[in-house]
Length: 287
Image 1 (cartoon, rainbow, N blue to C red):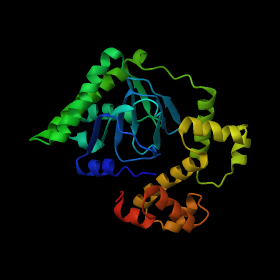
Image 2 (cartoon, one colour):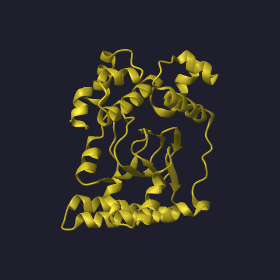
Image 3 (tube, rainbow, N blue to C red):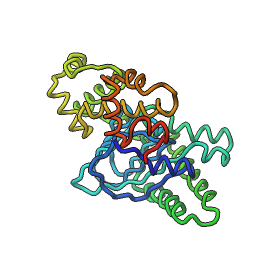
Image 4 (cartoon, rainbow, N blue to C red):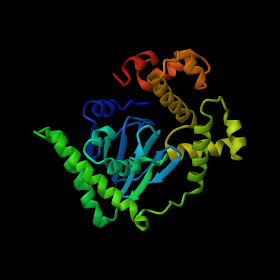
């Protein structure tokens, strides 16, 4: 589990974090959460994106809008270049720039618990890509008045997205999922409902009426993660929230999240988060 330290630090310092036409590759794409909300724009490649309990098969021009606190992970193929743009920001970054009514409408774009998909046609994509490049360029320059310009560009992007979202016939229809994706969604739903319990693969198999082999195979194929690794990632992400927002002892948090012992929890947390639970509670972000 990689903590998105640059994202959280940027959001806390400025309120916005942006990348345009990113083409870097990671050996392991983490299941993660972060502060703020995200506008993700898929440009090129072959990938699916898990947000909460939804699985999105991405096509060029797809845009995903979701709250950073929702567990999410992209699963791109390394066979072709993977290119995307995204901007993360905190609601407070824009709160004073727009009226209360407009602010509420723009933030409503991120209310769906499993993300919202909007597809932009080839004719519309140049405008979308220009928004991300403009925001990124202004953020990199840090010239006089850049924060105001950043907010202006971001508002323009959000207004364009909001207008598009209201043209209901232009929003991409619900995706037709394969049998594997439909079953993986059932697995994700079960994990999200029972992640605090110590359930076995046999119990999961009986609950979903699917063989253990099939469950393991299709989950890894669609998500790129084993069920056990995803479950642990989910528990660690929930632990991060509890460590920062509560004063509960580490041992109690461990028990609440279904770890066998506090030692097992601490070892798992350090493996996935890169630091101990006590260090995370103290700092709130990665080192």
